[in-house]
Amino acid sequence: MPTHRVKLAWRERTDTFGPASLIRRSRPEHTRFSVYLGETSLKRVQALTEMETVSLGLRRVAGRYTFRDTDTCFASAQLALADHWDSLHPLLPWHENPWCWLVQLDPPTTHVGEAETLRQAEDLTRQLREEDASITALQTELKARNAVRRGLESRLVRLLLTRSNEEQLTVDGYRVNFRCEQARPVKVPA
Image (cartoon, rainbow, N blue to C red; front, top):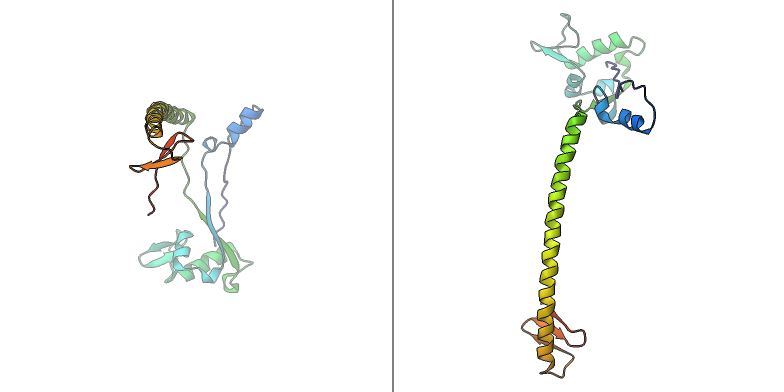
């Protein structure tokens, strides 16, 4: 199995110190590239499937398999992997079937520059302002409608209070409570 060294987050050198520089250096847009680890598993070398072997860098040339740029090609992916493994790990040969880690790396992500980040932040804050204005307008309209409803409720309670000696009445789907001076819709059981 090939061994690859991946430097996960190489940071650019900065000469300034302090809280802002520490935060700035830890942000991903200040790395040359970022590789994120995906799925990992532990398997025996001889238990690797052909798809897993191909994902290690195996090439198929004219129906045969190889890991190298040479003319050495093999009839199966397992034989090509065995040859490649033995060339990389002479002290731990393929026929001993050692354990190996399979680590799936997610594709590198391109980082957005600081100017682009600021532009996106401005767009999002503009959208937030629009939503806040819309919510404020709706709240103002709701207050006005609640005031109208309270007026209608009060008029209904006063009208029915003069006609009844009961504590509450149900009229046209509304339960009118004279003690609380409220008219609430009656919940119809489903």
